[in-house]
Length: 250
Length: 358
Ligand SMILES: Cc1ncc(C[n+]2csc(CCOP(=O)(O)OP(=O)(O)O)c2C)c(N)n1
Ligand code: SF4
Ligand SMILES: [Mg+2]
Image 1 (cartoon, rainbow over the protein chains, first blue to last red):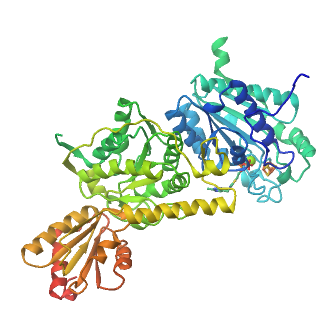
Image 2 (image 1 turned 30 degrees about the horizontal axis):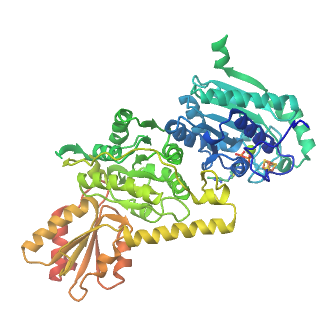
Image 3 (image 1 turned 45 degrees about the vertical axis):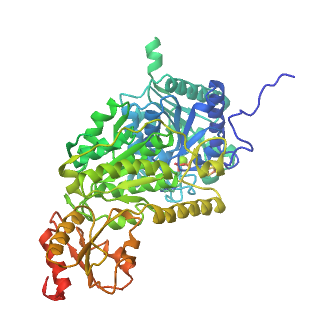
């Protein structure tokens, strides 16, 4: 019988430590598949972060340096400068990347460092129990905005792809969603494209993956996908913001 | 080898390159700017990398990644910047990552002053960051010693897979002296082994500052405890000068130790039995040097430091356990302790009229 689908060997059994229905697990699987398909498992360095994404190092079977909260882009800078032979990528939540790590994120992007930054946007601080993140929606309740985020008080959701698109150096900037199969396939192709750019030493890529947090959103996994389609995906438009590779081949 | 005339900061940078440093990240702050400036031109010559970080936090975090892939690395800053680096230094300690941090120290607290001072003693000797981690803290008193200790710090960082601190005050950084530079060490990257790998994924290299079970967390803390206790046995460095029969002793480090030695020499020439204890490592502290003193003869110990309030005096208190009166001589803000002051205070102490001298 033909084997059509199996767990990538780059994932450690028994697998996810995430909550049921959490799309962190899916994002992790896509990355694991891409690493396996590229045959670079032994050359990969995951720069993990603080947040639920930090658990990725427990399931992805590659070398890992797990940075402190927000500092993944700086750690990735040191790693990719010293070890150009490695596939270096960060895996960060929205709180980690866009709040506490904003300076590190933007400056590494601006220097055009040769690593891939992967942002998991779940519009909350998942790990710490659902506080407001820079990406939290206007009106969305969180444990620190119990009546909902108010623009006058907390400002507006931050759009990291659009912000990074203001910088000259980045090669590839894209936002994908993990809510349905067609989008998931695009996301995987985008991750692969970014990793290829890194392997070719062409510089910085930024891949934002729209995700969920059923636990802290207080929704079932299926309801959380509905919430994404009705709310977060309307706030955060999907698509490729920049692809200098494509422009070069045109 | 021929001696060269070099400025302290640049000599430290060159010693680092010779010690195998191939990655440097730093953020501008007086009085250490010559270190990043030197590194920006020197490292590319030897195939190394210089990055100007967007902050001290970021610079030290770059070391986290550089050290993780086995590159010898360094960052430097001065006092206010060290507070920002403390997060990353704690992470380097927790991640079992070798790295060298240089603090060309200046006045504090806060932005303090840009003049030379020794006001970071508590911060560097207790735990720069949270979580009770420690560092071997090297405090040079000459440019040559700054070179030798920086070079040594790289060896020790490798040996213990831990961050090390070189802590010259601003005057050592700024002065020019003749130095003999050490030979070039190999600068090959090396693969680390970590406790976190054993806990999380033994097949791969895992650098983690976090442990997932109580057993692993405590186990790691025990590992560090054991290492720090070993440092207390094996890594203490101190200069003891004329202490055996001393009736009065001055304890001072860095530039002040050098000044104090002159005072001791003058007093000895006059027949006054003065001695010097100059800690070279601030941690681990030279507690044993104080055990060797003859408390039957000793009239007092003067602790001289460029810090108000005095800080090192607490370690001297711990080491002497009330066996002898202690006095403190302090200045700060860029005012220096001069030989005559140490001389006067020791002499008064020896003659038993300490009260009359301010
Ligand atoms: C210096 C520091 N501050 C705060 C924390 C607590 N903390 C842990 S995870 C986290 C937020 C994570 O949110 P995000 O980055 O969005 O990741 P998610 O869990 O949502 O995937 C915070 C604030 C920490 N570990 N370290
Ligand atoms: S808390 Fe939220 S983000 Fe974290 S694992 Fe659970 S569902 Fe996922
Ligand atoms: Mg989040």
